[in-house]
Image 1: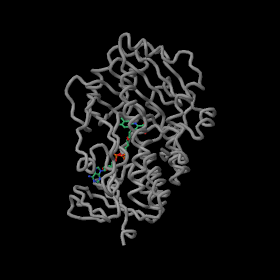
Image 2 (image 1 turned 180 degrees about the horizontal axis):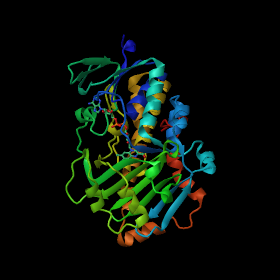
Image 3 (image 1 turned 45 degrees about the vertical axis):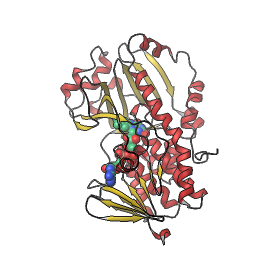
Image 4 (image 1 turned 45 degrees about the horizontal axis):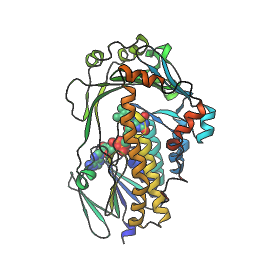
Length: 397
Ligand SMILES: Cc1cc2nc3c(=O)[nH]c(=O)nc-3n(C[C@H](O)[C@H](O)[C@H](O)COP(=O)(O)OP(=O)(O)OC[C@H]3O[C@@H](n4cnc5c(N)ncnc54)[C@H](O)[C@@H]3O)c2cc1C
């Protein structure tokens, strides 16, 4: 009987939709329980490495995702004080050959739409909105979730893809977030308002003392994503609020005029006070597990949070496939395959934040790190990250 029960997925973000697609491919029906009134994404951009495209292909939505992406020619880091070029990695043909897929930038709505279309087309995914998961109960064969709207739903398993403030994680782990004190402002700018001397087909970062600025094109270059980050002067609480232009402009003192243009552009800003959590090694609790930001919330500095959520989903599907949909064995293999890799992203993210925001002598060290480095050496250093694919996603030890 439990084989006829759906799998419950808490959360209809990138991770939840990717999980739904992976589960349908293993023969399950899926119920996605989403707290918001609609299934959607915020208006901002996202970077996707080749590993994300390997995941899209494995989920059957690679062409949809590619058709909405901007494929960059390079990624570049400049020192925001003096415009010094710290490093440049070409992401054109040689990069694509090496990693079998492109580096891309895309509007978050477009990536979410690609997954949503794919999940809807299967006819095997039911979407329930205004449905906030609050409590989970389990017996030997099933999971029952109780929702804020009074509904209960029973499934053969529960995938908690309910984001950084996951209720599923709270019930089983209940660990505190680590609020970084770093504040992120994001905005999307029309091409006509974006400075010509920054219209690069690249994922671009300007790194400065206690701050950095990111920009890249979206939607065929019709729009540009702008993200600026700084160390807040005041204690912060994890979350999103409306931002103010005045606050952004009160930071970034001493930044070169070329980079400074970025903070003068947006008419409206959204403000994120960010957090991550210490990596944990237990993601599975009976028939419930966590995935995406619920499992490994991270700072954004590796630009890999969503990529990891996509990888999680594919790996979960593969673990079910090799274990003939035996949930106990599959969840154990899923966890074993994902914990170290995603923890590496969380810990590397913290180090990247330090590197980006370096000052004084540490800044000089950062600026000397990649002098004279060949593209091949850059690519070798990225192999662990971008070399991931469905064929090597499962732990073998
Ligand atoms: C500034 C910034 C830049 C970033 N840039 C990149 C990048 O370039 N590349 C990249 O790969 N990643 C990037 N990320 C990370 C990426 O945004 C996240 O890792 C990704 O969105 C996580 O997806 P998710 O589905 O796990 O969680 P979420 O996107 O948080 O989705 C969770 C969903 O669950 C729902 N939900 C929450 N609680 C409940 C509940 N109790 N019941 C039901 N539903 C619930 C929410 O409404 C939401 O729809 C960035 C993040 C930030 C903050």
